[in-house]
Image (tube, rainbow, N blue to C red; front, side, top):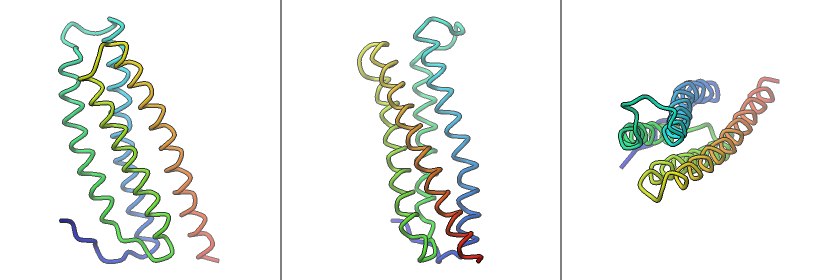
Length: 149
């Protein structure tokens, strides 16, 4: 059971989200590379030792770490004025995790064409989720600007 941290100031909350985003971008890059490598393996444009089975194992390990990372982000206790935006950010992050889980599941279902289609669909979903994250973070920036005035 996780325990919420003390309530953060607006500035500290923004700093924490910026730190979170720096790490999120790393995971985003990793998932993008897994997708690209999977597609190359399926098309036969790969190194001799690259295969979907080992790629799936790496993907699963990174997904476990990613889920722990997202769990840490949910512990942020935003200032009262940002609670709704924080709630929405957490929902988007949960959806992003679900999309990443669907990618891992796709490795164990069906043939390579099916895998290719599911990976493409999941990456499209993740792109939409990244846009939503950006929109929410822009709302925080607008809030901060209004608070300074």
